[in-house]
Length: 157
Image (cartoon, rainbow, N blue to C red):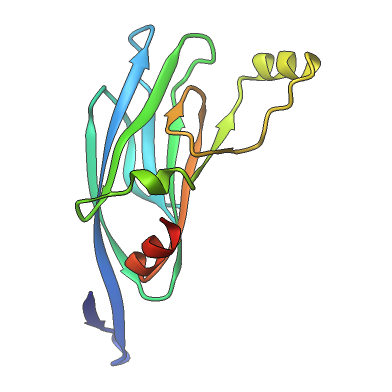
């Protein structure tokens, strides 16, 4: 927990949380999945190709008593070849958040032709998938959380 004084002289409390994500990939061709990470729609990690076992690390300065939305935008799937992007590990300040991943949602962007075939075959595809760690489609993975972060974490797991 860090205190910072604003220009008005008010003290603002916030947390610094260090996140570490290790990705896994499976690709049929030499076309890597891409990912970018955002916090409340602000880019934290710009879009980049992801290789197998690649780690990304970023620190977030969080205000007290605030709602946040951490998003991983998964892109670069051509809707034809097998290409999977996975979260192999997810840590905050060195704490394994694997159990938290079970409560998060992935919002897939189903390939249009495949989606149409599924609907015509009577298969209903949900708008979001809970607990997905392996993403074979483009889409968004979302973790909604609040501060204080560790209080939210204890309520969630």
